[in-house]
Image 1: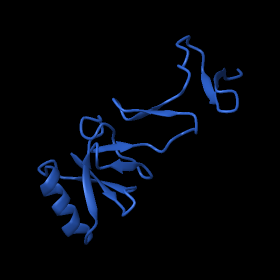
Image 2: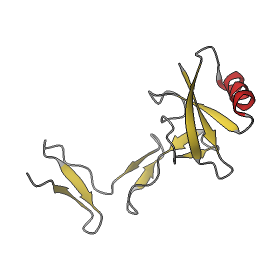
Image 3: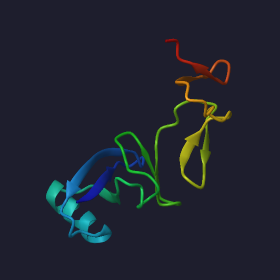
Image 4: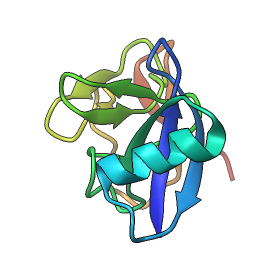
Length: 113
């Protein structure tokens, strides 16, 4: 299957659709425009092999780097320009404990049992 994201004028994803696998980037974009009556369409892939990440509604499309970027989850997070994913300013502990990010203290806190 091929997946295409429709991008609005602000380069925000407004929907993602499934198309026939026979469509490549340009041909698929043209098919989407014809079928849906216009719009700007960009191919995406569930495994992130195209444009760094699978597009989601509300995500942005960076046409300079040709990637999809999720909304920033917290003000302190920084975009990793290798993966185009948001990273916390403190590494998540790899200790098997369920944790959540606390923006006020800028720490990973354990989830109470």
